[in-house]
Amino acid sequence: MNWDLGIGLLEPWAMLGVIPLGYVLWRRLRSRPPSLLFPSRPAGVPETGASRPTALALRAAALVLGLVALARPATREVVEDSSRGIEIALVMDMSSSMQATDLDPKRSRLEVAKSSALEFIRARQQDRIALVTFARHADLACPSTRDHGALSAMVEDLGSVRPDTEEDATGVGNAVAYAADVLRGRSGTSRVMIVLTDGEENVAVTTAPAEIPPSQAAAACAAMGIRVHTIAVGAGTRLPDGSLRPLDTTALRQIADATGGAFFEARDADRLATVYRQLDSLESSEAGVPRVVVHDSWHLFALLAMLLWLSGLIFELMPTGGAP
Image 1: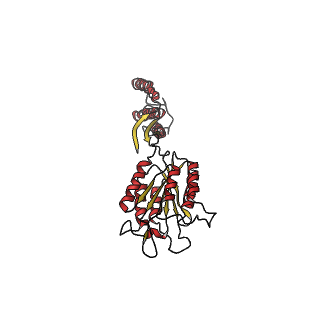
Image 2: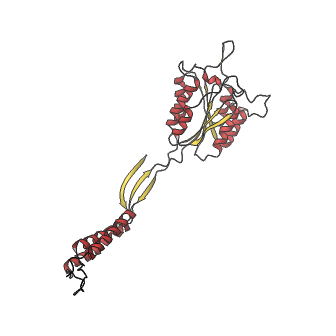
Image 3: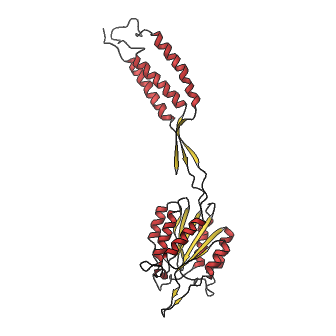
């Protein structure tokens, strides 16, 4: 929010020039010099009004505006500095299981998650937010930005991966490590990651030593001072026989504990919305220091002064009568 402090003079001492200017004008008006420049003029040379009232008034006005320009009129505006907001990375699971409708019968897990994330984004006007999506691999859907309109549009366009494809897996460790790299170069007063998933790590397994396990990614975040909050959504994983296996949240709890974050579970849409509101209150932005922006407008008065002075010259040189 900005506040207009109104117009003022940066160099008000210059207005003291009005005193000698007023004295000169007063003497000029009392002296009433002859109105002709030439006692006798040759044929064809018109009379001129050296002290015409109009010319005198224009020149006087020009001098006053010139003094105003020297006094530097300016408007002052207090601008909130938002450069000290938090750096946030939203990390969202795009695996096919996010199409389950256990959070809301009318919406998928992903749609519910997107709705809560959008509400969170709208509340974080001072913060730069990045969006990272993941299934087997992690992708940067939106770089860190304060353009929350563009970010929100990208969140709304998110879709889960197709089921039973190579990409349809849950690489939590890879996603956390990737988002940490996104946040590593940021300069906010605080760097925060919010990881939302409905699954368990199944990419960094013993048969894939090149992948990053959640514990290793959490250690890297802790070393970089990045706080990671984790959210487990849904009632669990639906097995082929139709039974429901509860989600193992051990890895998500460990990530949050290792980095100073918080772990949350959300079994329905209302609970997920509450979680994001809790995160909003947990991660309050540090208010920036307001600064005063000065908009100098002396040049406008200087331009008007020159125009009036030229107008005075024109009136002074205008003939007062025709040729004899």
